[in-house]
Length: 354
Image (cartoon, rainbow, N blue to C red; front, side, top):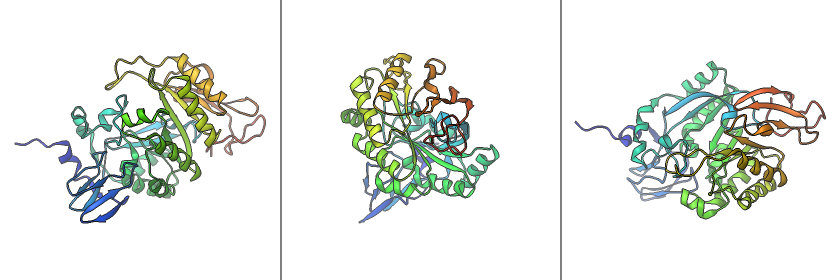
């Protein structure tokens, strides 16, 4: 008896894709991400999850590989309803192949045979069931995460449209390898967009399966479209921790808006990058110093709770008052008003606080 492969399980859990164009002769072009894969019948995109079946692009729908209630700080968002819970769901697959991926078992499905075990986590569900789960848990936010949400945007939008009707907020936790078309399609549903900025080297980005300029452009456009943008850089020794790289990232972000929170987080050896040492607190503190010197008002050090001093907290950039005290993913104190005002000096703090 033949055992089912992972694609045998996943391929039926699809619908006709919406974020694509018909090129004729049964050829389709996907624009859910910036690879813009042009596919003939039988071909799969770079993500392996979107594929051309008889001239129709199929997109993942109707399952999760994980769904959990998390603090929004875990995504991480620091200026988006701090202290709130986020019902976080994820599917399988990614459009990158980072050798340091923290979620590689889910993200590298159908690309790395070692990820085939991810099939055991698949659970069929509906948008209605996921929104009900969020409501029952008291979550204020619905987040698409764990794998790359751009490649499963049809599924996310069907969930988000119901979540918005229910008064919930919606966010993406993404690598930012987005097209302008998909960002504009998501804009009516997404209030928050966390984007990874992995480095400022295009050659490094190409090694990971991406393109630096695309990600930079996505940060700019998401900000212009009114999404609340926070940016995360996983600091990896020997990969992106040089002063030059850090300065370039910080200056770019400050040029988009000095109010964009920049999270510099600690790397732990994993997946195919196990010989690189973990990031020290000293490296993170150097990165935050550079971010602040570059003009960013909110720079946070993550993944080392209790070891980075005040760099988990939010301070007023106008009067330096301590506004939000954190330890790890927990909010110990929050004195910002629901309108986002510093109670000491009366100045507005950038973010979504309601």
